[in-house]
Image 1 (tube, helix red, strand yellow):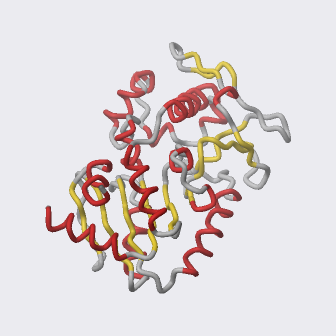
Image 2: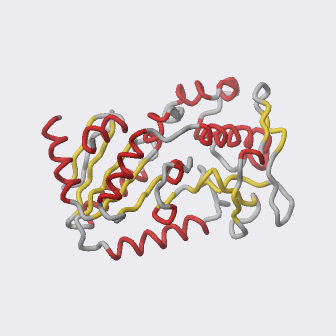
Length: 273
C-alpha cells in the first residue's frame, strides 16, 4: 500500500495537468447518503422503503408525469440536503493541487450535488455529465430553457413525503423537473451539459501532449460510466496515468493505472497531504 501511495505522489508531482473524475463515493465523507445499495438508500428515505422503491426505480422521469408530488419530494429533499452539506477536506486538497498546477485542470463528474463549485472550483472547468440538481427544465421539452433553482422553489411534507410546492416551467406553466439525466430518460435537456462538454473538449485539445494525472474518487461498478471513461483516457493519452481511489472496487484494466484501496478522503489525504 505504501509503495502505491509513493507512486501516486510521484505521478501527481510530475503531472502538468489534472483531471478529477468523481462519482457518488466522493460525497460520502461529507456525510451524504450512500445510494449505491438499497440499504443505504432506504436508510435515507424510509418512506420509499415502505413503497419498495429502489434508487434506480425512483430516479426515473416518469414519476414527474404520474406522481410529481412524490418525484419532487425526493428531489426537493436531496436539494435541501446538498445545500446544507459542506464539501469535505478532500475538495480543498484537490483545489490546492489544481492551483499548484497553475489552474490546469478539469472536473469530470457524474455527481449532481454541485459540491465542486461550492468548494470553490472554477465553474467553467466542471463537466457535470449527468446534470445538476440546482437547475430545472420543462418535463415536456428537451430543447427549451434551463433555469437556476433554489430550495425555496420546493416545499416537502416530510411525514407524508410529498411535495406541497413544486417549481413550474416559466415558459408553459406546466410541471418542471430537475435538469438531471435519470434512468430511462428521453426528456433530459442536454444543452447545459453540452456547453460544459465543449469547454472540456477545448481544454483537452490544449493538453494533448501534457502529462495528465487522472484522479478518480468514489466510482463503483453500479453505474461505471466515470470508471470506464478514466480507463479510456489513460489509454488514449500516452502521457496520462490513472489513480483510482476506492475502498472496494480496485481493479484497473488500464495499463497506465493503479489503485489506492481507501475511501475518498482517506486516499486524498494519503497522496496529497
